[in-house]
Image 1 (cartoon, one colour):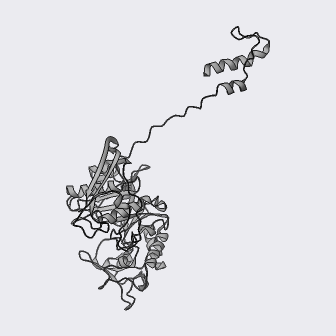
Image 2 (cartoon, helix red, strand yellow):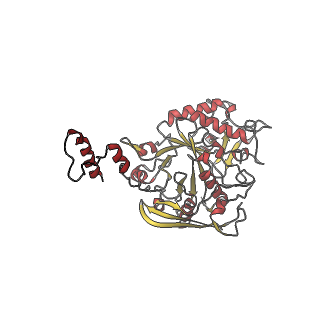
Image 3 (cartoon, rainbow, N blue to C red):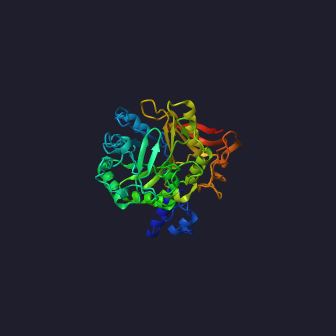
Amino acid sequence: MLCALASALACASCGGGGRTPPASVPAQATVPTVASVSKLTPLPPPLVPVRAPAPPPNHIPTWAYVDSCDGVGRQQTGLVRQWVTYAETKCAEVHPIAPMICRAHGISYCTSISYIDPNLDWSEASLGLLVPRCIRQPNRACANESWFVHDARTGRRLTWTAPSLGSAYLLNGANPSYDAFVARYARRALAAFDGLMVDNVSASTAEQLYGSGDPVYTTSAELRSNAAVQQAHMRLAEELGPSFLQIDNGINMNPYTLPSFALLNHPKTVVGLVAESFPELTTGLASWYSTGLDDIAYLDDTPSLARNFIVLLGYNLVGSATARRVQEATVMLGFEPGKIVDWADLAMTKPGLAVWPEEGLYFEQPLESMQEPSGPRCLNGLGGPCAHGHADLRVALGAGRVEQAGGAGVYRREFGRCFLRSVPIGGCAAIMNDT
């Protein structure tokens, strides 16, 4: 058609020079003009090159320690760059390994993360956790008493006690001078890192002060309400940003605690929440499994949290097959691209990088998904249960785990297209029994 049109246009352009029309065209016929040809024979649309779809990633988003506090991990650079999305250094003051692994020769292989705990002072326990150094000094030369959290009745400092770690003083994130000190410290000591994993964060007094007395304190002189606790965390995050991405540890899957979703995006550098000890504790499957699925579904399906993610930090001592299956199945039940990060710390007593072959699986075309959970007692600290959420994937009720807000059960999710290290393997499915 294009050739015929070109021929007609050529004749139209030379027909007015006194030449006789071709024999195939009657003398009385009118040679079509450009306008009439375009009406009779529309030009086809221009050809647009079709790009092949990008291949799926080689692995789902992952998180791992790339060292311990003695510097172990330097020889694992190649594995980290191939398998790890978020690479964390726990003792950055001593061994700032992650930035050196994650960036080289202008290439970014992963996001480097430093551990920091600005909420507890572990100096009395002589632990190497990352808190400002001068707070560790016996004379507290850099601090004043307002940097600590106190009993509202007696005025004494509140402590947080862990059987395996000892006691720590609670620090007061509501104090502007303390927040400014932590931010200056982080910008000086941790400037090479892309982000911070901020430990011991919560959204309520009951959880922030948990373990700080007998009976457990639910208020303090400085932090008298859930709103005050949240504002303290937001104030510190404002001081830290925009220098770092921030991922808060935590979110507790217990339905009687208030989730920490309100802390996300305040400021916008706060992008993620770590769910520690979910889905696996060192002793087995975590409690409140159905509520954990509800929390994942809420983050997946809430429009205001579209840019945020949840990190599933499961624990196991020896990398048991059961722990690995539970971790992977839970990731699959809640998987949405960019919304869930797999931190499978499942070989705590063994050396080496904690990444696993099953993290090379990637999923597309889900046949079932969880909708946003809802209900008058859902995800507000009142104990649940929730409609939708976990219930959208439950195919059978279970028994024997009475603590589940939504009841125990068997959960299933199928995907139409699955990949292993970017290679298609057909469909796949997860079946999880939490009874």
